[in-house]
Length: 208
Image (cartoon, rainbow, N blue to C red):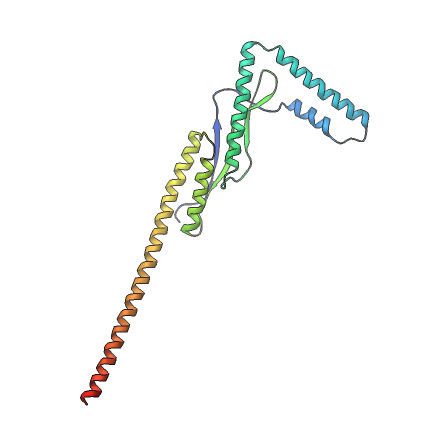
């Protein structure tokens, strides 16, 4: 195949801010669930985690209307981005986990606003294998319910490669059919020659 192997990434960008899982909250949650033989320290960590949650809830109640609107947009973006990239990850051509770009919300939490999943576009050693691989790329690119412009671009590129692979496969079949027809014709010609030769031999015996 003339088409070389390469790797592309899918990304989904949104126009508004977003992020997920504040670093402080992650640290506090880890401290709260980490196994510890010292019960007093574990209880202290749990109390701190609860205090952080209470502080976060308190901060939410202190947000302005604009900040609350922004926060709702961030949460919606985070959910949408993660669902989009999860759909890509479920595709047969996904070659790695999702990575995200984050924005900090007015509540101090980090929300995902963009993401990408590495997807390998590769051909095979035969046209049939290439067709299978490229169909997987297209399925992965269009897996989300709302493919991004980049997703559509990757799918379009894979379709062009797929058409070339299908043409090669069709030519391969045509070549095999031609060889098969040629073999059949040669066999027919050989049979006719043998029949004519036997007929001539019988005629010669009779006239002799």
